[in-house]
Image (cartoon, rainbow, N blue to C red):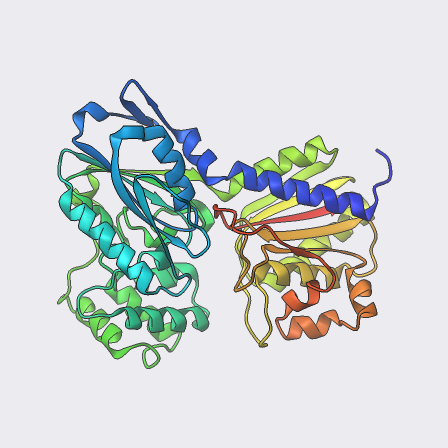
Length: 445
């Protein structure tokens, strides 16, 4: 293979990322698993004769749910009666039979509450002869706020903010969310029963755990009120959350409030849960594109988590090893990984885990040639920014220094966005209408 310029390697990295996005496009995800022929709706390995149902209804929540709904409208045609979907602001689609509401994420807002109430009202009108299809994707937990009796939206907002700032992981956050909601933790399945319920899920969690994706509205919940109190203790949150929330959780732990539905609950006897898209699909598509472009590939894992900077340094170390010894894969090489890392905030800058990954990797690769790193969120939004992530190489730190930007300073401030912006190296996709965590690429030409 001929020598590869840094510009060429960068172009290849972007092409691989775009291939990964295409593989987990929400409409494509639904199309792979759902089809209708002669009134028989096939969903994965199950078949539903639509002549046996009085009507088909759709509800949904998440960044990708409107795009999933668009394809479902196309498949179902006149069989679909109506529906309600909540999406993040900027992620709406104009649908014919399904109402699409834009709402707040990651902190829930009034618009999300109104949409959730509409979805609950619709479920209250369906019965045993109806089919309900639930479209769920990342962000669904915040986008389907339905506080339990005695709690308010303000309580949920303050709780969410406290949890996000505490360092609690998403499983711990969702454990508490489930126990202050009327739909999370399997409770949406309880509301839908005895209707037949089909849940189509785009996974944005490590390991594709159904009870973790958007707080598991349609699957049994293995967590308890006691678990919630333990989490509050672990992060010293008891005096930082709304008193009404703490009181509710304590009542639940004493058995004064009904637990979320567990395995064996009748609510799940008429429910099908199907994952239609996940991180590994994006990684495999990126790998296929990389091979087409002439790279030798190695997928590290779709389940990488941990502190972003540490994970970045590990990826950089692998790139150095490839340059030095040809291991773990010979050049031209492409390392691919997925999952979702975390950033411990020390500064007051702007950025997200993918931009911080690229910045930390750039610092570790300073001065090397023929190495490019790209890290991007598949939903097109990295942290509270309009960037999906960033791209960097061995010359990034030097180029930045020529502009008066010191990588170490911007890392210390958690200000990766303002580091990459003047370099023109932010990865800008806009809303992708999908969400399967992150895609990271290390290319050695």
